[in-house]
Amino acid sequence: MYALLVIAALFFLVPIYLVFATAFKTPDAINLATSWHWPTALNWASFSDAWAKIGGNLGNSLFLAVTATILSALLGSVNGYALSKWKFRGANTLFALMLFGMFIPYQAVLIPLFQFIKALGLYGSIWGLILAHVVYGIPITTLIFRNFYADVPDALIEAATIDGAGFWSIYQKVIFPISIPGFVVVIIWQFTQVWNEFLFAATLTNTSSQPVTYALSQLSGGQAVSWNLPMAGAILAALPTLLVYILLGRYFVRGLLAGSVKG
Amino acid sequence: MKGLSKDRLWSIAVLTPSIILIAVFVYGFIARSVYVSMTDWGNDPAQALAEHPIIRWVGLANYGELFTGFLQGRFRQELVSTIFFTVLFIAGCLILGLGLALILDRNPKGEGLWRTIFLFPMSLSFIVTGTIWRWMLQPQGGVNMAPTLVGGQPSTFGWLSSTDAVLKFDWNKLPLLTASVVGIVLVVVAVRAAQGGDRRRTIVAAVCAAILLLWALFVGPNIKMLPAPEFHGFNLALIGIIIAAVWQMSGYTMALYLAGLRGIPEELREAAKVDGANDYGMYRHVIFPLLSPITLSAMIILGHISLKIFDLVYAMAGPDNINTSVPALNMYLTSFRQNQFSLGAAIGTVLLILVAFIIVPYLASQFRTEEGHA
Image 1 (cartoon, rainbow over the protein chains, first blue to last red):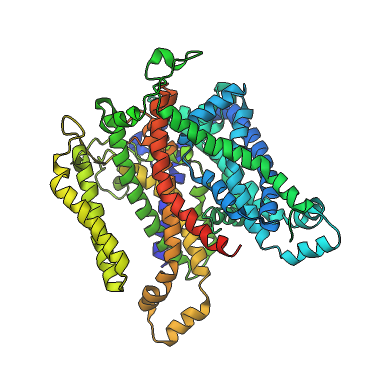
Image 2: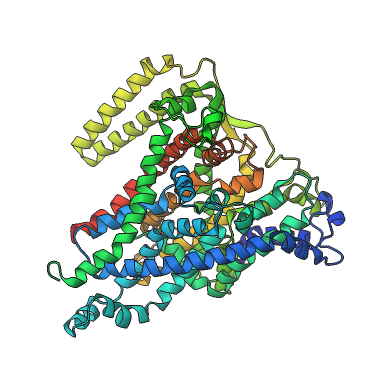
């Protein structure tokens, strides 16, 4: 059993070893034949070079991911609250129609989206990208909050109604205070998704506002690249989401499982 | 709760912005894409980016071009590639994910650490994964050099650059092949329904199967979609991309299975043991049947990811490698590099139809049960 675990772990970890081994080499020490060797001396310059190339894009990604995440978490929270605690006829059908938006290939809406963002004058600005991420994030954030609030006993809401509380005061005094775990799941999930997204990043932005995924793809795209640079870039680009995952893995997994629906 | 109280109005008011946004950004844009796909916008490069382009309605011509046009062989290869990719990717993720979940379910020491290791690629972007694996799969390095670590000869497999393909078939035979496969599946359905004593289903399936097979026998062989034979198959260069995709997503499958395994009540296992089931029997008759809904969910989630995948391909093999390309990548290039918007919209619509085939029944089944007693 442990042998199997070790073999599996190697499959998952060996790429990481190679990434670091390559990132720490100097460009002239990178040689396909010796790609498995650990560098004799650690060369940190790759990271500063990569930082110089994609640091600005990392900043873009950070601003984008934080803003889009906060907006979609707030939207998802009130949506989830309305859908789970104030059910009306057809609420489930409406929700299913909403969820469909989570699964569509964005290629099927990309051209109109591009036109729309352009018509708004937001093409090339990070705000166009934020708008897209917030809108297409509505399904998943609503889903996670709806499932989270479904576990809040209805009796609690009824008791509050009898005390004369209305829609918003129940949200403020009852729902919101117990929502922290829900927010954590949604924030981690959205942050990771937005940070990692590529298609919108490639279509809706230009050089000044491109997020790091696009910059990284350009960094490694050329033919005659020295591989220490894209490897260091990959580490930099992966670090934020990786840290989130390592520190808050439990909530990350919960978001993962919510993605498999369960109405 | 009664009628249209103030609170009820508030809940609708709160939802309205999201409903409008989804209506516009999802359904409105899909409708607009379908419309664009039926025009000639961008087929004339001079008109593509004009201020007021002259756009003509051309009906299904773009789809005809994609499936039978001389210039769009690339798209047809991509469709075939994406089907092979999806099948192998799902199989890889399910097998590895289930295997890992079964091991972790036996509570090995340091379980949390193992789980962390298997799941971390999930937090990376496909671009990062692609960059890493592109380096791993260099023709004369990385994986190909691995045998030398234990004194072997380096391998020379062209992970991302191979141009060999297996399982090739003539595109002209596609309707024939499809009809035969669906026909055979329906025969199986009919036989099973007959065994289960479901007469209506037996008859419907048998009649449909008969029609399809007769069609395949007499009409199918004479259909020619292209003037000349055009062969498409499974390009070996895709194997590397599939491995990278499995590396990234099998942890997800493991998490799904693990949640399922942990949800099986201990009493059930105890009961099976009391009834004299050995380990194998317990998995075969108790645990696997309980996991089958999870397998279905996982297949659907992985399937829709796989049909949409393109950033991984972009990062690993580059946008211009025809042997590894997929429709989702082609759509991006056609629309935003060549500015052929109508053709791009048509590819996007084909993708949407493929994904909808998987997702719509799934969503419907997830919500039908609930709506019943809502």
